[in-house]
Length: 237
Ligand SMILES: Nc1ncnc2c1ncn2[C@@H]1O[C@H](COP(=O)(O)OP(=O)(O)OP(=O)(O)O)[C@@H](O)[C@H]1O
Ligand SMILES: [Mg+2]
Image (cartoon, rainbow, N blue to C red; front, side):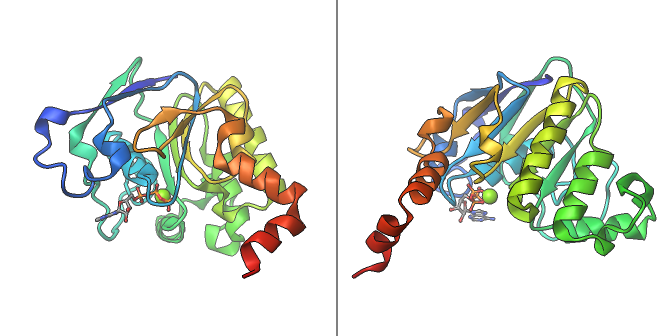
């Protein structure tokens, strides 16, 4: 693995009253050690996962709207507010990689069409593939080798079955290709990948958490095992 530590440069922050420093998990961040080739960010909506992931992408000089270093295309408001206030520690530094944002994947697909580069993506325009197919094309064709991949909710496009396929691709890249992944996710399936560190952004801090302690695991498990009772609780007056 390559990226070892992310530190927040507290002394350079003008005010903790404004975004992104007002986000509790970011405000209280000192440094985050990455201990495994796969790191997950979990936490409630709005807890700061994408904010930190974008900042890392900017520091890696990836296109913060989605893409790698060589993907230059127009995007709206893609500058990371946090990027210049974090420091990344590498051993060794890698330049290769990719930032995937579910929201702007459509723009990325158009960019690949514009530059006629879809040979590298399964030989077919990403627009002619379904959302999930195009995601998996990207994972299986473009991702390889010594690189760092930053993925924001990759499950958004994937059926449960394809999430399992994704885990297989992830596993191959991590075990033979020496790739590193940081993945923000709400998927209890993706989070189940073994030998990963899970960082929770809840409770006003970024803290390591066990898989079984995540809301994603507990709520999904409770729901599946007690669906009638659960629905009664939330639907009845
Ligand atoms: N450009 C912005 N200006 C001001 N506030 C913002 C901006 N972008 C995000 N926020 C706020 O920062 C907080 C963290 O947002 P972020 O997108 O990092 O959350 P997240 O953990 O990725 O959530 P989700 O799980 O919903 O994707 C939220 O309260 C959000 O409203
Ligand atoms: Mg997000």
